[in-house]
Image (tube, rainbow, N blue to C red; front, side, top):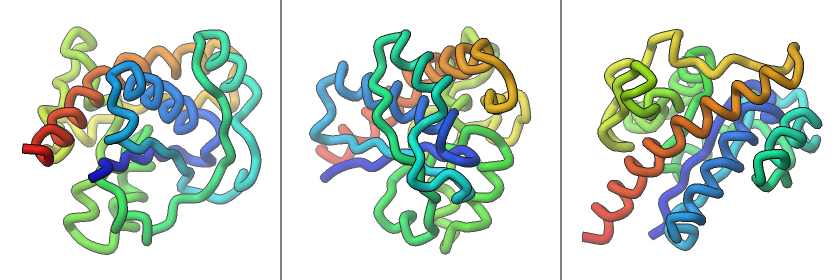
Length: 180
């Protein structure tokens, strides 16, 4: 059974496509692409049908990641097929939890940086199904690089890469638990 993860930011052209690309690469490196499906969306539909921001594409490609992407808006009906919904900041976290049709669906929503390694000063999530302790801390936000320069996209990528390792570990634990 496929484990489905969706990354969500505001317009689905900067942070969430970057997180999707990085996490898809981590999943492939781990040889889990047949077991884990990775996707992204935005809380709003302003950029539906557009590609990722050119600065996001430049940074992704500069670091060896795939940048093929088409923006779309997250739909409440998707909760039924998703196992984990990863918010890029606390605003997205709150919006997604409000959108969730059930309490079980709301519990699927997590902040990406809650999966960061302990060396970052944050407590990592212990598993995809366990709520990270620091879920609501604003310092776990991945700042929106849209209104800044290329350095903001580089910082975003660094945060995404850091959290993706812990996220993969948590998701792998869930996938292996299903197989047992």
